Image 1 (cartoon, helix red, strand yellow):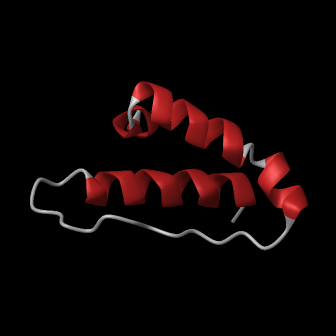
Image 2 (cartoon, rainbow, N blue to C red; image 1 turned 135 degrees about the vertical axis):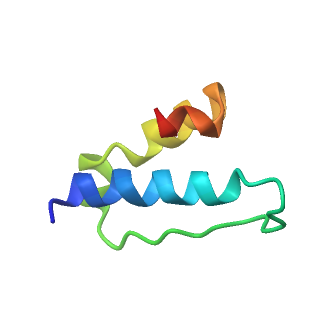
Length: 60
């Protein structure tokens, strides 16, 4: 599976599960071991956008 697709699917599932009203989980830790992967997936940019626009924006 392509890395970028796996990243998108992971984020969408995490956001979807955390969006449930009965959810009490407060923190999720996703670990990416290589800096070049973080850069290629624009992890920082995506997380900044999610903080600005709301996490549910990742579901569209």
